[in-house]
Image (cartoon, rainbow, N blue to C red; front, side):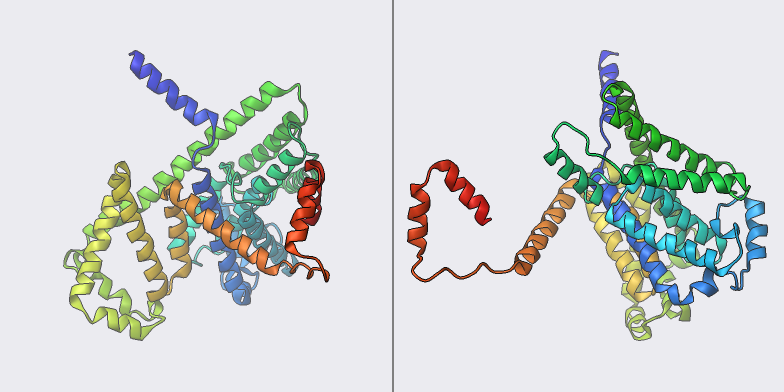
Length: 415
């Protein structure tokens, strides 16, 4: 009993003391924000037909459907070109801000609003990737996804270096809070918020939580409430991270087990047929080349089923999990090219990123930092040439003859 109690107490401490998987969460944030941003940019020439008021799925049909299923969408609040373009621009801007990690808590909420608004406005637009993005946009609101690799993390590090032990003044946060609260109150009083009870309750809860977090952080006497809020945020983050992992496992498990029941997957020919559909053949020559080899088609068909069914069980073995994870990401990359489903593949790769090992992400981040430093050195102007008569040896002798403080100051001035 003592050992069990000790294990439980350690587990509770691990869940409440700190947010788990900060690098994995950052990759998920970047991946889904980039997927949605690229999709909106690619479809911008056609966004009027897809989501606009003059599209085939008109506003009256959208309002009838949302009234029946209580789905949230801001595009049904008003009818007009200006409102539609404003919502589309908000979805673009919020995706870019979340990708960069600027005010990630507010950006994640706006990102969710943009995803839900556009997807629920025209439910017949998109592929399987939009369902994953739909769910993950909701889960990201509960995560602390800006702790690393974000502008928020850089701002916090600079503030800590400049004002150690003290909080930097925050002028942008209160402005965002007032503007978002005013807009939320106006829409709620007008009775147009919609979305059943879940989405409005979540929006108000986040708005109130941001106010409590800001107030507790600016009052030194409110240390205990700040600790409590930090614990709640950690629990919500870790719970959302667990749900994201479970969602990814559920997607692969259900897909694999449904494939087992199909006769084409059982005889090893299922991969052949989508390669010869016009909708999934952006490169007919490449599709013909891949489907011409019957052995390759059979291996890919059976391999897909085996990997999808086995992946949830490999989480107990890190090495096997990493191998299958690499295979699945490679498979999605191939699907993006061969079948012409880039955004579905990007969404699935972003979901798979939650299982990437931290050591790999740290190495990846280190390489990116070194590449950024090389670019910064390349863009930095060259120092002026030395004056006639000056030599490197004379400079070193002069510096060596100075007192230590002066030499340090000279080096700092030169830098």
